[in-house]
Amino acid sequence: MEGPYPDIQGGGSLILAWQIRNKHVLVIGGGEVAAGRIVNVLNADAKVTVVAPRSGLNDEVAYRVHQKQVEHVDRNFEPSDLDGADMVMCAVDDPEASSQIYKLCKEKRIAANIADVPPECDFYFGSVHRDGPLQIMVSTNGNGPKLANIVRKQIAATLPYNIGTAIQRVGMLRKKLRKVAPNIEEGPKRMQWMIKVCEKWTLDDLCEMTDEDMEELLGFYKPNTVPSLEAVRLGEPDGAFDGPFLI
Image (cartoon, rainbow, N blue to C red; front, side):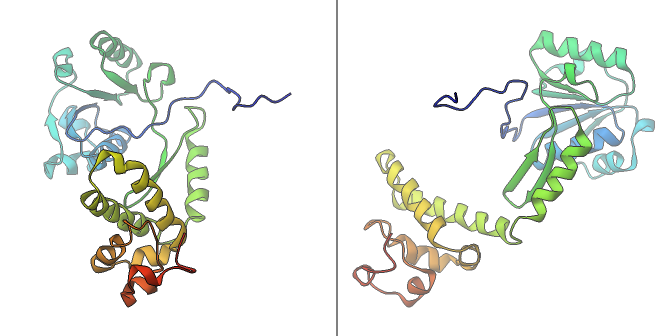
C-alpha cells in the first residue's frame, strides 16, 4: 500500500545550485578534464587557480592562463596550495597522488572532486544545458556520464527556443517588483502575483516585454490583477480589467 508521502529511494545525491561567486577554486592538473572543470567554475564567477607544470597544459587551459582568466602556478601540487581554497578539483593521471590530495582536503574540510574516482568526490559534475539564466543539470551519480549527456540533449531539444530570454525578463520584473513592494510582509503577495504573470503571459509575451511594459504592469500589482500584454500597452486603467484580464 502506497504511503501518503514520497517514497525514499536512497542512493542519490543532493542536487543544488552552489553559489561560488568570488570563491577560491583550486584546479590541480591542466588536461582536458581540467579544462572542462575550469569552464564550469568560471561560468559561476569563481576565482580559479590552476596548479600544473606549463608543459602539461592543454591548449584550452593554456588559453585561459594567457587570457588571465585563471591564475597559474607552474609546478606540481604542494600541500600548501590548499591554503585558502574553498573547493578543490583534482584532474591528474596519478591515482596515488589523487588519493593523497583527497585525504588532505578531508583534513582541511575542503570540498573536493577527484576526477574519475566517485568514492573520492564530495560532489559530481553533471551534464549541463545553459540558456542565459537557465541551467539544467542531469546527473547519473557517477554511473554513466555519457548517458547523462544523451539525456541532457534530449531534454534541451524539447525546450522552447526563447525560454532563456523569457526567464531573464521575468528576473528583471521581479527586481522591479521588490522596489515597488519592499516590505517583508509583502512576500507572499509578490510571489503569488509573479505566479499569475508567468501563468497568464506566454513565453513570447515575456520575451517581448520592454522596460516600459514592466513599469505599466507593476501598476497592477497593488490591486492584484494581471492584464494581458496587449492591454498593458493600451494603457487601460485598473478598473477596465474586470473581465478576462483578472486572475
